[in-house]
Every structure is written in C-alpha cells, then in structure tokens.
Length: 518
Image (cartoon, rainbow, N blue to C red; front, side, top):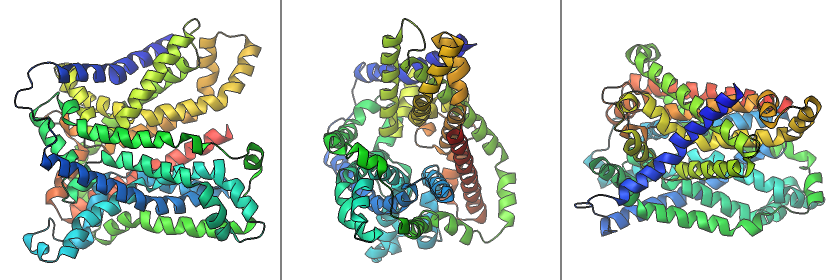
C-alpha cells in the first residue's frame, strides 16, 4: 500500500505539475504565429502599468491591515486570541474575490452596473471602480501581509521590542525599536503581496477596471496555447518584483538567536493586541456584514439553495477531488524530499524541488496561464476534458503549493520522532514513512486537503477556460449572477458561500490545534 500510494503521488506530480508547463511551452514556441500580436503596444503598456499601480497601492494598503492582524500572532498565548486571528485570516484568504467585489459594490452601486451618469461625478466614479478594487485587493491580501510580518516579528522584532519595553510602553516599543528592525520584512511583505495581486483578475474586472489580465483572458480565448507568449510582459514584471524580494534576503536573517529565543511581549501588551485584532476584524468582516445588511429577505436563503442545488454538488465533487490530488502530490514530495526511497534520495530530492518550484510559479502567475497549460495538455483527451475532473486538475495545479508547504513543515517537525521510532522498530525508510511519519502528520494532510478543496471551490479565473460546456459550476454561475443580478437570491448565494468559507476556516483551525497537540 505504501508503494502504491507513493507511486500514485509521483504520477500525479508528473501529470499535473511537471508535464503541463513543458507541453505549454513547446506549443507556444511551435506552429504558425500569424495574427498573434506580441508587441507591447501602447494599449497593453497602459493596461500593464494600471495593473501594476493597483497592485502596488493595494499591497501598501494591506500592510497596516496585516500589521493589526499580526498582533494576534505575536505569541501563542492566550490561545483564544491566536486561534481567532488564525480563523479570521483563513476566512479572508478563502473568500472568493468575486464575492468580495460584489459585496463592496452594494453600497456604491445598489442598482447594479454603473451608468453613464456616474461619470459626471469623478470622485464617485473613482470610488465605485478603482477605489473599490483597491479596498478589495487590500482586504484579500491583508492576511498574507500579516503572516509575513508575524514571521519578521519572531525573527527580528521581538528581541528589539523586549529591550525597548524596559523603559517604554508597548506601543512606543513597537514604533521606536521593533518597526525599524522589521523594515526588511515590511519590504518583503509588500513585494510578496504585490506579486500575488499582479495576477488577480476578478477584483479589477468586477470593479470595472480593465487591466492586462482582462486583455490576456480575451486573447487567450482567441489563441489557445499561446498564453505564455501573450503574457510575457506580466511575467517579466512579476519576475522583477520577486527578484527585488530576493535581494532583501541578507537583511531577513534573525537577530541574536539567544535574544530572539528569550524574547517575550511586554505584559501590558495583551489589551493592545486584542484592540489591534478587533480593528482588523472590523475591516476584514465588512464584506460579510454588507451582504447581511443588503439581504433584505431571509427566505432568499432557501430559494437560492433550491435554485442552485446541482452547483453546490458539482463544486463539492470538484473541490474534494482537487484536494485529494494535492494531498497525494504533497505526500510524494514529502517522501522524496526526505529520501524515503532508499538508493534514490538525491534524485528524489531533485524531483521534489522541481515540483515545489513549478507549483510556486503556478501560484504567482496569472491564473489564465494555468488554465491554458491544462487545456493545451489535456484538452484533446475526451475522458478528461469532458468531465469535471479537468477543473480539479487545474485547481490542483494552481493551489498545490500551500498543501506541499503544510505537509513539508509538519514532516520537518516530526522528523526526530520518526527517526527515534524507526530505530526502535528497525523498519525500512519507506515503511517508516508509511507507518510512522504519515500518522504523525495526519492533521496536516487533512488540513492541506481541506484548504485546497475550498480554494478550488471558489476559483474562477483559470477554471473558466476548461469547464466543459453545460457543466454545472458554482463559481461561473455566481460570477454571471454577480455581473447581471442585484436580487436577494444573488446576495443569499454569496452569503452561503461566505458561511461555507467560515466553516472551512474553523475546521482548519481545529486541525491546526490537533496538530500542535500531537
């Protein structure tokens, strides 16, 4: 059973992660390019710069929100604050961006899409379009910014704050000592969130702000298999942004290990931490509050469930399949990275690194590229392309990195226990991986599957390229309803999605607590 599971994971890693980029690149560089415009025309340049400007500003806005959220992660005590902060962050990250854009549109566009009369009031037009896009993008990326800043706190900020708190209050210690020490991490947070936002499609699109991603989707639909060529300006810009982040690496090293390990937040900081998280929650939960306020008719919750029942079933089936694929790939990567197969440790680690790199690229590049890769590779296979399974493959490729990282981190913490138990039982490396390591990291495996499943349920930018015609799709149905509907049923369906996301975040927090206890 261990060999079969490992073989399935390796085959899926090859078929889902490694093969599609190679096939897509070969397809893009071969054949006739007649009629394909690749030059950076003035229109494309303006769209690219507009998207870059939105990403940079929204990432900057996400930093103070992320800093407020990171206050809940400064220490693991009290447990309720740490768990509540984690739930809030997960609920925000799992929130579909198209639902976020729709919720923010309700106060400014209560009657639906803007009409020409709004252009007579430039400030209102900006608020309903770019202002809404910026706020939505900042809310969506605030948890990621908070996570990076929390890591920076534990590596550099905590020791500086502890020393400064001897003769200053907690807020002054943060401003005078911790913040200057964490400036490189603040820069890294801004760069990472900017790179994520460069590929965002739904928020600017639904906010009536056309960017390069909108143009890329339209051109990819006209020229399948050429997305890698069409997206070269955006890929180059994303690479430059990430390269700048790599330059910061020497300044990200932790402070004095002894001081960092012994650092503790000042005793009087709990009230400030609770206040900071409460302020962040007020902003991050605002979209849900808007949906509740504009529901109007509670009966719409029941009617929405009656109208779209098959959509939920299809979403659950596709999401669970994507989660299962991602978990099997993560298990194979974890096994190969630790040399579970004797005699092939070096080769296995190389394969694991390749899977990790490709899955990381798939997370940062525009989702349209991921959908085009799978379409080019498997679009001609009727057994896959005509079924929901191709949507699961697309979302598994796009979101495999979080699952792999979760499993690798859990496996690293369990490595010592595995070695001790394996030496006692005198089992082979493969048997130790199957009987001991997987048992110890079981909560992480479940959390990885749940995370990818719910990310898959809400994904729309890549899956719309491969969804079979006529197949029920919750994201596409909801996206179309958001475009043209302003009735209570649409609001109710969005609320149901948000409730599902909240439950998923709660389940992930529970699995994390079980993992810590184990």
